[in-house]
Length: 242
Image: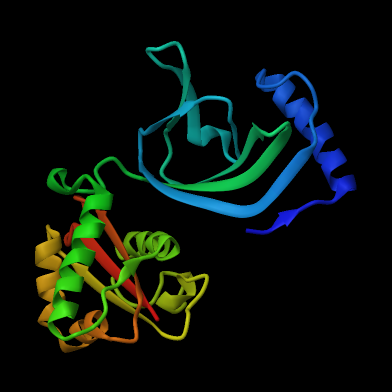
């Protein structure tokens, strides 16, 4: 994590935030500002509601969300548009304003079959099955990586348009990665309706099995995306990094 502490910049940010936060009735006066040069990413299905507390979310695309009233009298932010929604997030801590960036990858409501609606469970189950196979050959277990999860999610959605290791823009599948490490690999599948089916299909292929069992890999990301209106319906991605 890199923190920038420039007094002049802090004064400017404080003045800007005074205007923003006064409008949102979160705080009543300008405070020293601290900008965190990090980006937090998450995945949510369309229609998800995020409860708003003492934190202000300022979307780059205001039409992507709406503010709603919750039962307990609090406010909530509902995601109404599919895609990557970017936010500037403003909060308070230890007597100062804190600012960071967030990206929410919003998926369609029907992007997973009903029995696989828990994306975290599905991804973790795939990793569990892969690590079971790795244990049989003496390879160390893979650990899930947050940035690989985001990359795999992006790649799974791209498979609807182009089910190959080439991205829709013609670039390599690995261009989705922020860091490739010493080595990286990708497995894809289209059609399986469960983690067990997907892993079994990969194990039947020499190249896919080689990726899953490669002892040089240490990290994995698993992406799953479904579109009932396409012939193959369910799309799976594994990204490996060593």
